[in-house]
Length: 136
Image (cartoon, rainbow, N blue to C red; front, side):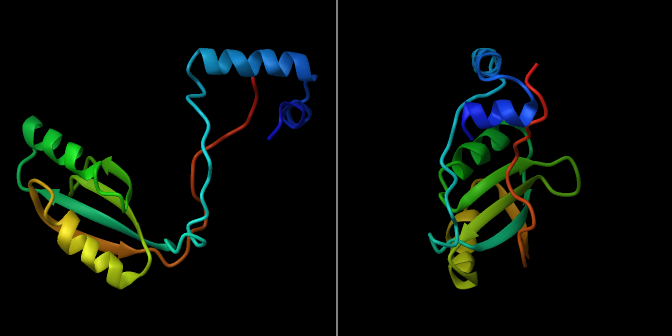
C-alpha cells in the first residue's frame, strides 16, 4: 500500500502519515517488508500442522531442536507450546506424499523428537499477521 493510500485510509494527509510511518520503523514497530509468495503457484498448497513431543525438555535439548528445525525448509512456522506437547509446526509441501517424506526423513529425525501428530489443513481461511488501525 502506498503512503498516499495509507494516509487516506487512516484519515491523515500524506506528510504527517509519512513522518509517523518512518517513526514506527525507527522505533522497531515495523521490522521490515516482505514479498508475499503465492503457495499455490509454487505448488506448496498442502498445509499440515504437526504436534511435536520431545523426549527431553532441558534447555540444551530445546536449543538443539530449535537450531535444527530452522534448517528444515518445509517448516513454515515453529512455535513452542505450553501444553500437552512441546512444539507446533506449520509445514508446507506439494502434496500428502511429499509431506510423508518430510515427516519421516526430516521432522522425525530432529534432535529429541519422541512423537508427532499430524493435522492436515482442509482450507486456509486467514493467514498472516498484519493490522492497520492507526499511526499515532
